[in-house]
Image (cartoon, rainbow, N blue to C red):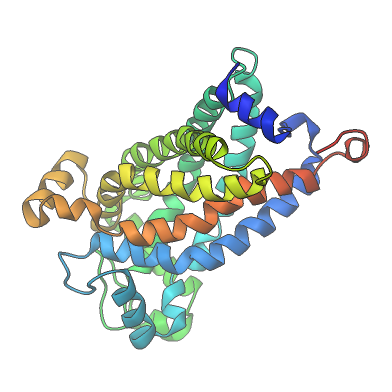
Length: 319
């Protein structure tokens, strides 16, 4: 038997598939859950991006130093620059879970391996999600780069816009500058780098998640709740996947914020300026922001699916 299925049988876990869900409840609960997570992790997403883009340690010495300096100079609101624009990625988030579940259903016709289904579905879902997310990311990242006294990126919000509107006035200004300099293709700058970051990240996360869950299942007492093993395995897998894909994430951020056109050229410049250490920039902030997200994915997502069960299945099956 397959080891993952053995583990699931041992813990008496039943996987809720796409056809079991009330789609209306699933999407409503999903948006609410995703928004709560975005609010909690966004500051670390902003810090990660600033650390990745800065030259050496010109502004911040690390995650904690960046957090303190941003709050001190820009206030708590500084940690949420570009947040309203970034919330539009909720659309891509729902497209991600829809693609993931539908792809799992399709792959199940050819393979019963949960790992294979998760790996293919995770990669496919990232491809679809990034096609929607990249333009939103490009705009929100430029907004993240706006400090009180200067911009860390190519574009700077004009002083007049700061007085007129704090939110979408700045967004319109950034969009206008991107379109004026780069045209429509400017909104997809770094698209390939994003695919090379997030498709492997999603595809790698699932196998490592199953690996850690399997090992913990073997080591843990029989009565240990499977939910606890999931809550531990998710962050471990996220830390592993983040470490593996962080070099490309650094390059992706620089391509999008600095307007680079070559992934290889950006890599060479980064290595020349900062050496191999530059490829680890923002890693701790990335792991911190990924931890609650992955706990929600592996624990909250299954709970979400249970809450979204079709009414006729709630009493007829044991979940």
